[in-house]
Amino acid sequence: MSDNSVTDFQPPGLNIIAPLATIFTIFNAISLTYLLTRISILWWKTKRSLTMVHRVPFYFAFGEFLFFLVNLVNGVYTTVHQFPIQGEACKIMGGITFFFFASNVTLSGALSLTTYLRICREIVIDLGTYDYKLFLPIILTSLMLTLIGDKNYGQSRFWCFSSPTDTITALISALLIVIILLVTLYCHIMTLVEVYNALNRFGAKFGQVDFIVARRITFYILIVILEWVPVMIYLVAQIFHYESLWIYLAATLSVSFGGIGNTILYIIYEKWRNRYSPTASENARRSSGIEMTRSVVITSTSCTNENCS
Image (cartoon, rainbow, N blue to C red; front, top):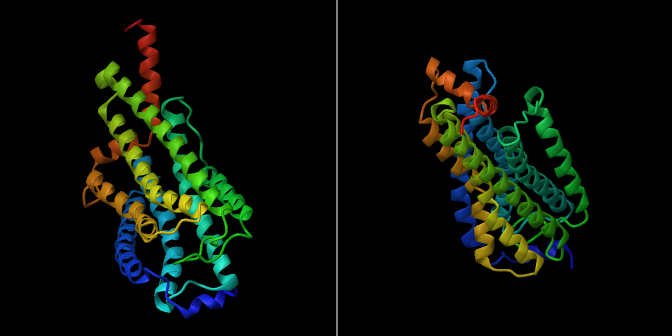
């Protein structure tokens, strides 16, 4: 059967998926644009490197925005033409979609791991200029995973991702989400426990700002991880060749959750306007995470030398 055979009918449920996806996509686009613009202005005005509490949501927003552009092409074509992109173009679009999906998921795990190493293992990794040492492994890993399924991308019911008969892409995607989810949960549970114990043990010497910073970074990352849980359900359903409108609907709407959720979190934490006061700058310097590590190391050492309990 040729790809053009699907052009004779509208996919069942498109009249439900399309308007809801459009609404969530608009909110997602506004949220991501706001977050990227605001943090970019902060970076430009302060003339300093962004601290972790700003860098983490900025990286997520940038990755989500690229993924949003790919989904926009996918969704608009289906909505306008009443069927997904056809032929080789659909396979290419499926591969691009998987690459940005893998990049966003892997970014969550990488940030979780670096935070864990910094706080729990007292290892501060030099990520290089513009954090290229963070992004290069993510890009290479995502590219390698994308090439593994290069023969399996194609048209599904509403978009181009993997063909209905393909289980390789769905399996790789589901396993990637599960692995990153477990790594993220472990890293951030251990990080929060470490910071909380240090706060209780050393009190003001440690500082509540360190606990707040770790908690904020944790919630930014968990919001993005939760974004992919409905997608994982969709992928598992695809592996077992099970189709249901609610699964497609949940997966379609959830991909907008990360951008909207992290923008709301950023506004809650940083309020509506950027702050450039000396006090805010000092707190921002501490929130880089490097001082957080130094607080744990220095305080723990001094406590050991004095044989305090």
